[in-house]
Image 1: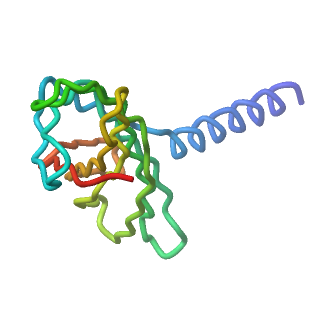
Image 2: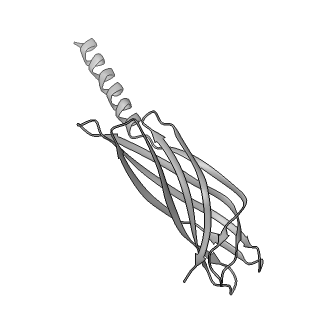
Image 3: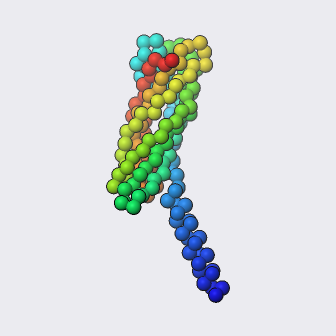
Length: 153
């Protein structure tokens, strides 16, 4: 009797461990060092960005075998205006979703943030284009394929 209880406990621990692995979140950091944005605002300026963008994801598989990926991108950036020398910061995030019957998802998304000016200069809108590839084995790759600034509020 004692051995069957021990066996049942072991099975329960293994099952819970496996369930925890399915809910695991994987992440990838994209470092930025003096990456200059393209200025799309006549009142704005290009900004040299420093910091990182962290991309993380988790997934579930439904009973039909469809993989549902939940992706989060978050930036933590600072930068200097190339014309005025003004100091800017951005710290925003966004959620994205993808569903695929394949074991991977390949998507390009836009992460929009407010580049807040620390001076009297007008804040700008930063749009970062991210290319993200994730799969059900826990692999993730991500890169910034473009940065632009637009007129903010």
